[in-house]
Length: 304
Image (cartoon, rainbow, N blue to C red; front, side):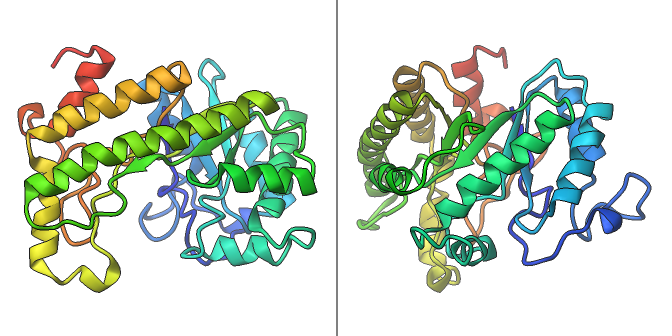
């Protein structure tokens, strides 16, 4: 499954309009979003499912036009995951305030997030496009979600909940790389409890549990990003032991969710002060020098 959240410019504080969207013949695909046609093309080229994110300011006209484009261009042989925005619960992004201001009953952004997720799914289905409608949620907030659904009914048009079960979000002992990796191992077990809580909620509500992002979360805070000692410590991502950690993590996810979809964040990203997110750090990197990537290939049974 390929999730194209960044390609869709999902987290940017902009107003999107269908009339001004990027098209395949636009002079660049780098000044705003990458055109939807290319998002479809990459999934087809990779023979993967496609997971798209619709910007929080997209109106019904935009959504319907997008649905019509998918009806025309998408071959329908793979799954299409349809998500409203990204991390609407996360106040680091403008969509949190946008959704909060439209959630009068609970004063929680998830209220509007549920409503708009269902509306977007209904429009796609009205245009004859089969989708899996995904509601993004916070990995630690299964109990909060239960409360929200008690206040505002969950729309029937939502098929799945997606969480981001990152491990190693908080590192307190920074005395050595080994200490960091030890905390990663402990964190995986803690994340397992989050997954179990969400699986229970989803099973109770008849929803599929998925993960829109996941993997390690070794990243300096904004205040630490210029501290070379911390940044260099977190390049523990290159340590051979990370192979074992990812193997354990992926096996746990599969066991607890019956091999549900998990989108690891992300495919390619250079290590540095903003994190070491990539399974590989540059295109063409040898798997032997990319322990996270090698663990994923082995987990999937893909010959290296």
